[in-house]
Length: 229
View (cartoon, rainbow, N blue to C red):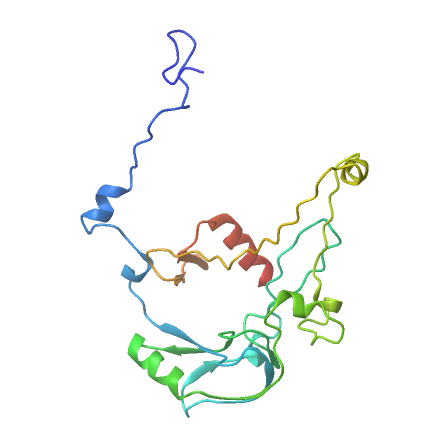
């Protein structure tokens, strides 16, 4: 296929260099990030310092606005869905409720007039967590008697997908040589220029909330928030 197309047949994008449009604002310091927006209040999360445990007590400084799971009754868990392979939907609470299941899980949210005050209050919130045995290896999680991370996923299996090509068994059985390879998938995470933050602005006149956040999926984010609330 021609990279330039032919006269009368229309233009094709195959092989063409696509000019970026966002660079001038970013490299000249005129880009707008979430952190550039004015904030009336700041939120800081208090996170679990252990990978697994029972949350028994949260102590907050007197007079501070600290939100816990007890304040979020009616707010549903964040629950990703997959409609195949017998997927078992496992919900993640917005704030840990009774148990913590991973290091850094949000347990409480501090709201304060300034970023510094929110940070200071978060440092003074005390968590009492009775540690339990964590599951830190996928193979260990499948062993008999392994701690169950989620009650909704017995055996620590959320889904088991098997796909087999037609006539695979006969080809395998008649192969002259079989080579086995162990492949490990390392942890991956997105690393945006701006840390994952969000800015919510409430308009009293319309009753609407505008959310600005570091995300590549604004429509899915909107739908998920509406579903949770």
